[in-house]
Length: 293
Image 1 (tube, helix red, strand yellow):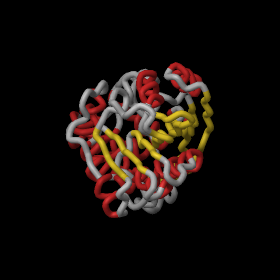
Image 2 (tube, rainbow, N blue to C red):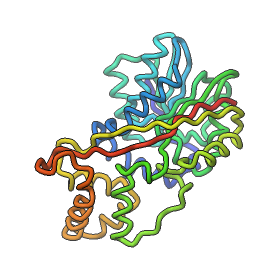
Image 3 (cartoon, rainbow, N blue to C red):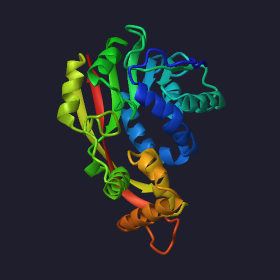
Image 4 (cartoon, rainbow, N blue to C red):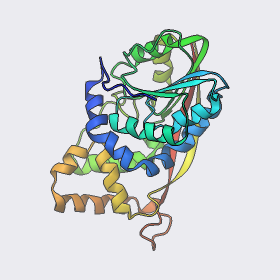
């Protein structure tokens, strides 16, 4: 198992800084919580992808490596899986995971999948669990991923639906934007909701060279923040969201006021109002995409 020391030739410098300096270490620290809201969707996408024994797979935005290891188990020792990500911290955790699972068919590479030379015709399957929404140029990125597929290969990924269908993310972000008077970023800007519009999603895939595109809705009810006060969960979401800078600049007293206010707004989602760490049940929705050149 190897990891390149540099992402090299990144077209997504802002995202590379964010995932190395901010999000990557936070995701590693909150890995268990992250798996609670991404894991069910990844499992559904894996079922659609149906990786087979002996296949060669590219895992885009592999993060801490849970999907990479799952793909390796599916393709077996006769196959191979390459996990790529921008975050050095997350790739280090992914390496640990793969080593613990004794998966020699797994490799990792720090690279920008939008522009990296992934090897033309190298993969039977390109897979991603929430790793394709952060490209500066989605058409260029999907074209590059399409070139990496062998004839007859397929790309399967999962991406979030609109914020209105994902209150587990949108509720805190929307409240923080109101409190700090922040403008809402364009819906197609690099970020969790960049591909939330299915018409736009279909269009960029076809512009990137995919002639067959299937988009299927998948919904889950997620139990979030179990075992921690709601204010602590709000703090994590603020650190990961678009209000991060404003929140950190606010100072400790104001930060606590914001956490308390947003925690109160989440009361309708609480499992048990009498138990501070009982968590919340919140809707989540994504698109599962099966695309072929």
